[in-house]
Image 1 (cartoon, rainbow, N blue to C red):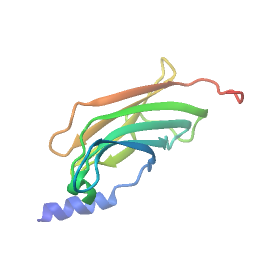
Image 2: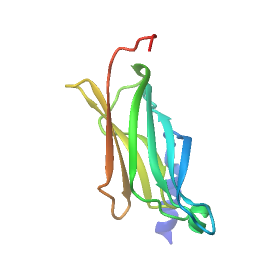
Image 3: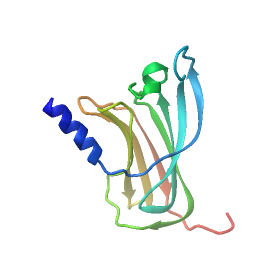
Image 4: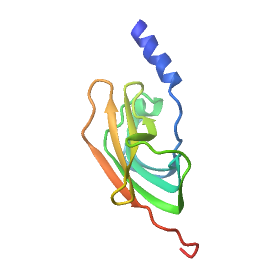
Length: 154
């Protein structure tokens, strides 16, 4: 019981990184009771890199458990990050730094996006993966953005 209280308290103290904006969704499985299973498309801006937006698609479990927020979403996700304006670093970047995290089960599973800077190729690399307290998933997706000059004519 003490462990459970500690885990819950720790989750409340986690800093909120970035909130995603839902762009759209499609139903994949009809459910008689509760919401359908879906694929959700969301967008978020990199908090330390102006001019970069990432688009994330992920599975969202429906049904009664999904409607109540008790279902565990699948680990599959896809990511595409794009330059949407002049790129400017607002803070120093750290390789493997978490730029987005979203809970995909009630307590133990989350999906996160981390950023790397490929100095040799002058590119930002974003990796999305799912982790779990006991056992993570090797499923992942990666995208890269070459850092290029931005023209106002684009």
